[in-house]
Length: 265
Image (cartoon, rainbow, N blue to C red; front, side, top):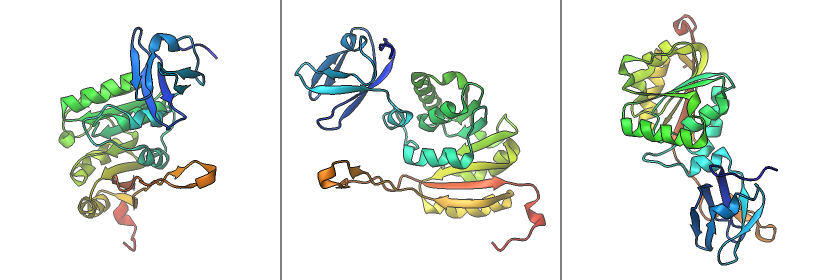
């Protein structure tokens, strides 16, 4: 395997406590840990998977970070879409290489990074946010992961609509999504999925009838909980703390002429 270079992103993982550090290798820099420090200059001659020792002789492994590792540690000013929801979002929206995806609510860019990673070099993500500081942070986080060339950031309110038409998927992370469904309907290709995330049931109560009124069908509402286990054979058991409610996910499919078919409601 090729040796690491300055600019590479690495995950330094301690087998002693399971602690880890996401680091961009920089000439002359040091990485401090509670087990000692490491010089970046000493790491560039190594490869992913190699062991390395700190200044106090404590061992770490150099791992190649996953996109989930990056999302969990992303620089943030807002609540983010967590990996436990993000994977389900990708599956439900059928994100594929070459897709055009429109999102509103760039936030810190955790989902933006994942979407851009999945659409590939032939795809496109258009990310709207009305706050310039959020849009700038999301852009910086995309640059750090190396997918900024696939994302177009637009700083404005979507009240007047999106610029795009025929999108393969749309995702909303906004306070009152029911107010923007007509704009989504003009942007999303018929038969394709809209995804949303909201923190409270009060928002869902407003959202469901609004979706039905705008010719969205096959509405699904869910939340995802995640419980990790201690990976020790002698005492395999759940971790003391689990990741519970971080948001409600909603999905719906856009159709033409909903009113021509009767439903049971």
